[in-house]
Image (cartoon, rainbow, N blue to C red; front, side, top):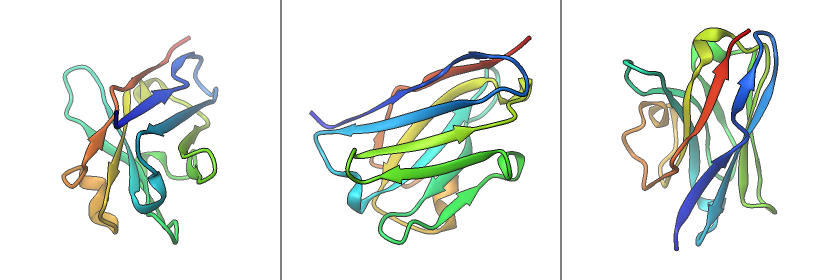
Length: 125
């Protein structure tokens, strides 16, 4: 069965860190770009970060630049999102998705074949 599974979410205090994982089952991520998206209650889904396949070019939303880092481990068929200096406004459900395309348009979230179910991130004191 083809699926993406996110993990690593949780409750963290402001200024803290979390590392989200996106593991693929039933297919290899080697030829897919992976995007991380988030959706907070009452808000639209927004692109957080994406990484191309092969070359590994990365893209970040302005609101996470310098704080979040996306990376991929081909051997583990997994993509990570390291989140540092977390803020209350980062609270959301975080989703990963796989796309056969590449380029900055990935941040729009419109060209993805597979989506995970999401993991909750809550930043609160």
